[in-house]
Amino acid sequence: MKILVINCGSSSFKYQLLDMNSDKVMCSGLVERIGEKVGSLTHKKDPGTDIERKINEESPFPDHTAGMTRVMALLTDPVLGVIKDLSEIKGCGHRTVQGGEEFTQSTLITDEVLEVIQRLSPLAPLHNPAAIQGIRVIMKLLPNCPSVAVFDTEFHTTMPSKAYMYAVPYEFYEKLRVRRYGFHGTSHAYVAAKAAEFLGKKQADVNVITCHLGNGCSISAVKGGKCIDTSMGLTPLAGVIMGSRCGDIDPAILIYLARQTGMSIEKIDDTLNRKSGLKGVCGFNDMRDIHTACDKGDEKAELALNMFCYSIKKYIGSYYAVLGRVDALIFTAGIGENDSLVRELVCADMEGLGISIDLAANAARSSAIRDISGKGGKVKALVIPTNEELAIAKSTLQVLEGKKPDSDL
Ligand code: AMP
Image (cartoon, rainbow, N blue to C red; front, side, top):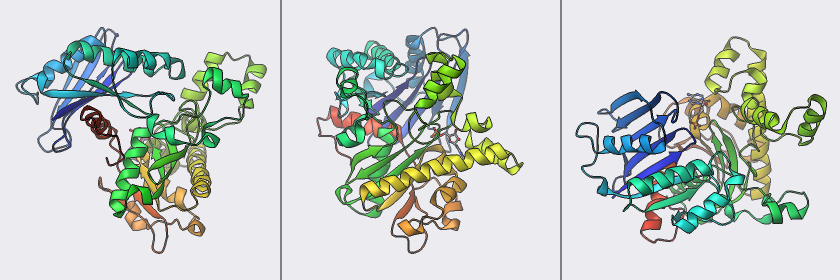
């Protein structure tokens, strides 16, 4: 059984074709600069293996249909392809950022479902229209292949109202749907399920704090397999400090900026999303560059690193209080999986909470799930590589097979 996974942006998309009998990625790729004079396509057959074959193409892709049409040709190419006929693809899973309160689980796409995703676009103006575009193109190019929307928000729909409501006039929720939605749900769900499996326990018996630390960062409190709180909010701007996003700030800063400088809403939006976070403090948004700058004595880089780790530590502390008992603290995504210093700084001085790490285990590099806990700590510290594409493919398969979604990913 082969499932295609599409993650569509406004001018780019990523794809993976997975063999669900073995969970193997048969090929993956990225099409970028759609609509520009020259676009680019990277396609990898057997990615990450010894027999990987990769091509890069520079050519114009006037729209998503053009890019997808080229990808379809590559999937069946005699040399770079992995299938003989497109009919071998039994389903397509689409990463869809905002599912609102309407979608609490992955959903087979129909015209009605597309309409609702469209209606939710004001809550994710960059993401939902792009996903819709991708869905429509796939429906046109693969008319017999069912499409499934897998929502970033669905894992967080189990939050209680005391966690998702904001203390603003209630009608903002009723009329404008202002509430916490949370994002990165596919990743949080995946690593929470993997942690239970790793600990040899049922998900229902395990409480975890999941730290997804990549370009975007979010932390979730997961009780017995269900999310009860998460750091991102109405949008992915909230929560911990990120590469170029500010995370939690005093909302009055926006009012102050507008009054003092006359900055427009668009300019403030752009500044807080793209020019803040680590980048705003020290000029670098990639954690690897920050470490290099720190090594050279760059004080702002040092400050940015410390602010980043401190903001994560504060969320861990508050979610510990919310959960009451924590079985595991999980690090995942680009920084969470690779950056031993960030993990060390985040976990420093938390022995009182039963959290400590073993420095040697923490420093060891591996792409496997690993336990980096210190001796005697009652909370396991785990590094769990995330795999959002596999999680999307599994959800897609569950919907197609009519199984009730569970967290047994
Ligand atoms: P992701 O969004 O999960 O792909 O994560 C991307 C981010 O991970 C990059 O912006 C880097 O800051 C970070 N990253 C990737 N590799 C490393 C590494 N070896 N050490 C530190 N940070 C890394």
